[in-house]
Image (cartoon, rainbow, N blue to C red; front, side):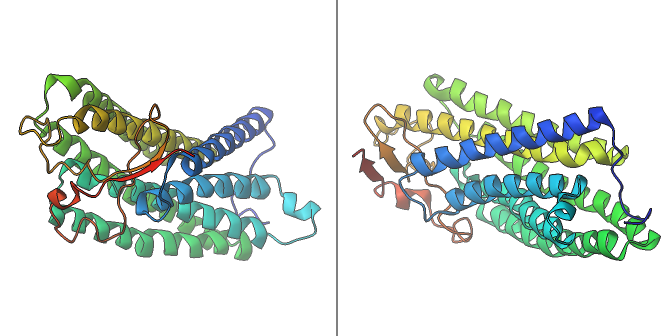
Length: 310
């Protein structure tokens, strides 16, 4: 590999940092996968698919970059294409998968359908204009290995990080704004407030990653990124847990006009696995068009899918 490529110096502290980040992200992602398959009663929803995709992407991304950084593929007698394909598929699933996780729960807080449609278009735009060009430049940097490819990759890396940061900040901001607009009673306000704090923390993580990218700490940023996504995914599960607690408090008054979110809050379309003492987990976002159809959440009020524990 020529000097045009991104060479990783053999720095002991950096080695420890990269291996630690990979281990943390892989362990956390495996835990999320286990929770997903044991928590949800329905697997045919966008939310579930996005959770599984993002967690699997974190594992592939971390493993692929370790393979690339330490040239483990050389020991196996294979070419650099192996880690490049692995980390590329992982990156797609990790980044866009997390955006789909956030997208699939926007309807829960009554975000207008036209806003949700615009968000969908933004996600598609970033797949085409961020994922695809970065993939071409990544392969060119490590395979063709000329200064022009390396320079183009460095610039595209910053651009795509900016675009994905804008995308995730937009998703998080929509959730924050429309959650604050909900008319809540005192019984559930503290639960919803916790989800707001968690979303604010996720937004700060996104901005922090962007800053690290722009100060050219590539060797640290690339592996820190996968840890950040693994953390954000765990926080998503915590938000899901809080929303299910909210539902439990709300279900007893679902037919009452005093219900804190009203009958059209979108939280009443749930899928449940477990015993009576286990928390109710929403199977949200059954398809990419859920927010576009403009269907009133009232239509879900009688469609709770309950699955008792075996």
